[in-house]
Image (spheres, rainbow, N blue to C red):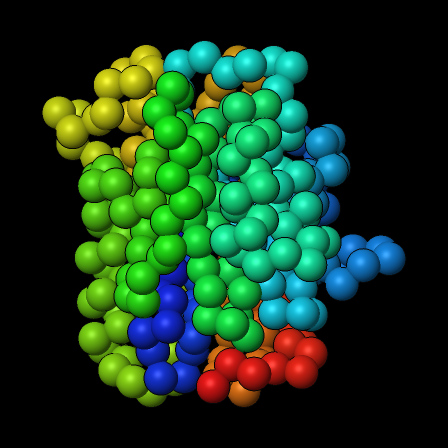
Length: 268
């Protein structure tokens, strides 16, 4: 189901610092983070539907999404993973792209989508849930935010736990360099589950309880489901981008880092 924590325009060294876990069936074909052929997109790739859960571009755009936890999905819906790709390929600003998406958002199952342009210091959030309610495009304010499987900054137990732990880590390092890989390991490998009385009560009790930790691992009739990719994305004030990923491949955890500079960066 995925969870992300990010700091936006609120740290002197990092206009954006993002941590994200991707949860999926372990047997679903997936390509780890890499540059995509024929375009300037860097991200992981769902080899089944062709989309991504998090990606960025040389032009300074970033997009990531999570699914909304809901009881019934629409089998014929469009793939949510195409949304970050469409934004990164588009010349539109985050707000312009989101405004265009409003007309087609009903064609997708429940999603939370963050769109950012580093150079213009613009970030918006859009979701097509709850069903039947007007879709609101929200400018994301500077600060710490958590995105899980309800609306941005919803007070779900795992989101509140991640936010609290992230703030503790940031207090520890102050305004200096952040050892991102170390922080990723401390925050995103957390297997503590929520108190049963605090589950949202949307799906079955057992399923929600299994998904209530930041790092997820649960056996299902369809195979093991859980966290299979953890990403740390940092963007520095000079336009340097670093994307570090640990990912599961054939039951083995691997890791790699990709660095690049935003072209014609103007992020001061």
